[in-house]
Image (tube, rainbow, N blue to C red; front, side, top):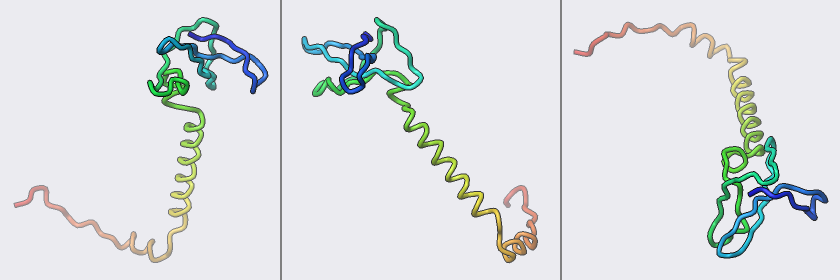
Length: 112
């Protein structure tokens, strides 16, 4: 269940997911970009039995996909695209001649 609690490091109230394991209550940070929680929202928490304090709210956005990973993936794809464009932009004259001289061989439809 989501409960808004004061956070000493942030200096304001933040959403925390409260759950119970082995008769002990735990609270994990439930702040995610593009996620808005209301007091009392029910959420599913995933955690290790050995260390429940490292739990997290189990959802596609925030647990499986995080904004840092999304931005990193976009940057990596952009860089790889730029490298591909830079490599193929200015071919050497020899490469152009090779492309012009290539003649396609007639291929048989069936192999005997």
